[in-house]
Length: 60
Image (cartoon, rainbow, N blue to C red; front, side, top):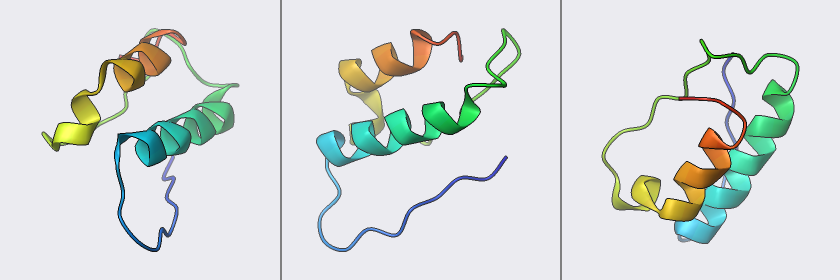
């Protein structure tokens, strides 16, 4: 699955959290213990709220 959004302006951890929540809604039929979301080491990807949103639906 490939998921993206076009964003105009600055992209911060709040905007990324919204993106991740939208992505997870699209993944709802699929998240199993084998689901993976790949992110690089960008600082906003390490926000605890983002990691919590992802792990809450068993995506690692």
